[in-house]
Image (cartoon, rainbow, N blue to C red; front, top):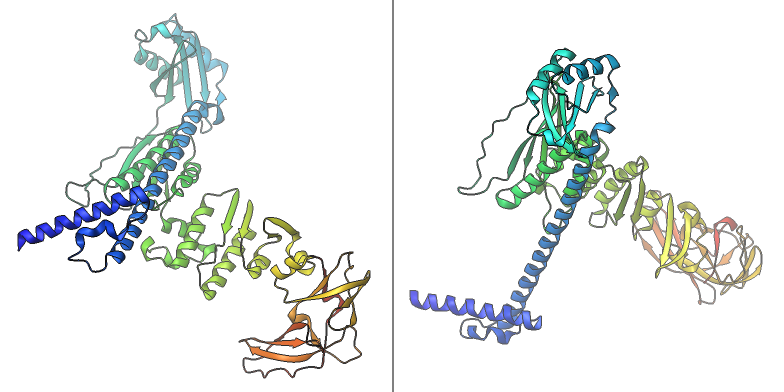
Length: 532
C-alpha cells in the first residue's frame, strides 16, 4: 500500500512538471500534458485549467516581487546618495558663526608653539552655541600629528572640554575637527530573539551620532519574521541613520523615508520606525514614530476620523478603512501633487459619502495640486473646483465646475454631466431655437451659437404650466417610476417622436405620484445650447 502511494505521488509530481514545461513552451497547459493521471483524475481539463491559473498567478507574484525589490533598491540608492551629499554640506547649512579674533589667535599661537607645520585654524560656534575647531595640516603629517596633545591645548585655551578629532582629507590637506564635549552620551544594549527557532529576527536597532551633539536610537519593527522583515527594518534604519548623520532633522528624514515606505508591490511594507533623538548637551529627548498604519492614524486622525482605529493591526482594517489609512499615510509625507484615481470606487454608498466628505475637507486644506479621476459626476461636482470633460482623449470642455455644468456647450459634454434631455433643434436667432417634434420656439438666456443642433434641459428644471406660458411644451405622459426621494416621468411630444424626462422631488417617502401635466416648460436660463 505504501509503495503504491509513493508511486502515485511520484506520478502526480511528474505530471505536474510536464504541465509546467508545456506552459513554458506554449503559454498553455493542455489536458494531454497530464496524461499520467488518467486512472486517478477524471477531470484532467479542469485540473489543467486550475494548474495554469495558479502557475500564472505565481509568475505574476514573482515578477511583482522582483520589480518591487528593484524599485526599493533604486529608492535606497537615491537616499544614500542624498545623505552622502548632505554630509559634506551640513556644516555650511547649519548657520555657523565665526568665533572672535581673540579666541582664534590664542588657539593658533598655542598650537604653533608645538606644531610648526600647522597651516590654518578655523573656530566657529553652531546655532546651538557649541564650539568647533578645525585644524589643517599637510597630508604627509597624517601619522606624525599628536592629535591628543593638540586637543588638550585647545581645551586649555578655550576653557571648554573638547572631543575628537574627526579626521578627513581635502585638497591635499589633513583636517582635524574638534568639538565641544557634550554633557551626556547615549549607550545601547540589545537582545534579539526571533519568533521561530533558528530563524531571523525581523527587528533592527541602530545607534546614530548626528551633528551638534545629537544622538539617535532607531528601532525598526519589520512587522513579521524572517529575512523579508529583517530586510525592510534594516533598510529603514540605515536610511534614517544616514540622514541624521548628515545633519537632516529627524522630522524631515522621516518624511523622506515615507516615500520608500510607499513603494509597494506584491506585498506592502508595514515596517515601523521608533526613534529617540537625544541632545547630549542638554539631555532633552524627542520621540518619533512613523511607518505603521496606527501612527498615521494618530497623526491625521482628527481630519480622517480614524481615532477609533488607531490601536488596530493592519489586518483588522476593512477595505474602506484601509483606503482612508493609505490616504492619511500619503498626506503624512506632505506631497506636492496628490493624484487620486477613483478613490471611492470600492466603497458602499454609505461609506462612500462619509469618506468623500473627509477627503473633501482634506483637499480643501491641501497646499499642493490635486488631480481626481472619476466617472461619477456628483463626486466631480462636489470635490473639484475645476474640471475637464474628456471623450476619446479629446477635451470637450474645461473650466470651473459650476460653469461646465451650467453650459456644457456640446452634446457629449452635456450627457457626461448628466443631462437627460438632449432635444434636436434649429437656430432661429441669437436667443431662439425651433424645437424639433414640438414645432414651437424656445427662448434661451444663453447665446445660441452658429451650428447649434440641440438644446439640453435637465430633468428637474421642468415645471407644469399652462398652454400660454413661455416655452410651454405640450406633452403626454408615457410612464413613471418611483425612487426613494423622487419620481421619474417619461413624456412624449404630441406626435410621439420625441421624449423628455421629468424629475419631481418628494416631500416625504410616501408622496403620491404627480398628476401627469398637459404642458411642461423650462425657464430660459435653464436651457443649454449644444453643438455636435
